[in-house]
Amino acid sequence: PISAADNNAGNPTLARIAASSGAVLTGDVLAGPASTVAMTLTGSTWTGASILNGAATPAGGLTTIGVDATSLWTVTKSSFVRQMTVNTGQIAFVPPLVPTDPASYKSLTTPDYVGNGGVMAFNTRLGADASPTDLLIIDGGAASGTTAVRVTNAGGLGAVTQGDGIRLVQATN
Image 1 (tube, helix red, strand yellow):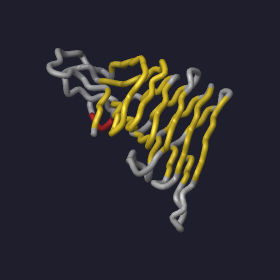
Image 2 (cartoon, rainbow, N blue to C red):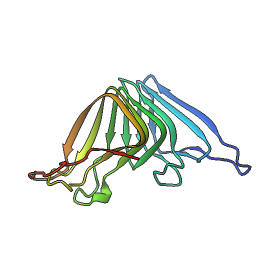
Image 3 (cartoon, rainbow, N blue to C red):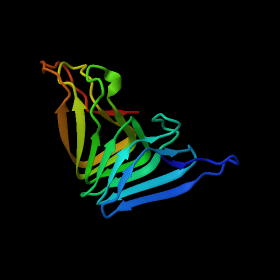
């Protein structure tokens, strides 16, 4: 993994990750709660998650991420981006290992999301309202711009939904 840990004296790490020109990154980004980690994907791909100590939490993970029109972030675990996610390219969740198990689906939590014509690709077991799905969570901030949504059926047979249907995006706080 790419790691930016706070040191023993409590001093944060400052890191900028700029992947470009066909770069292929694989692995998780682990960042301490006081560290600042900014990632920019330009003509590149990243397969991994933004986490702290193995879990998506507001205390850690990337500070910001930018995905340009020629780039792809494949989210392998539930992830947290602490300040802003800017998507001009594609953010896609890996398929669930057990499509019938809600715990197999991932989420991306960020306080602010800016869509610049990008694509967000979800896996959903198409069925009733409570069907398991990947999820974009806007926590305490705002979403703006436009993003195309692509849903891949993870084995559901489809069903009539009532109320709000199958939630792909959740705004909280």
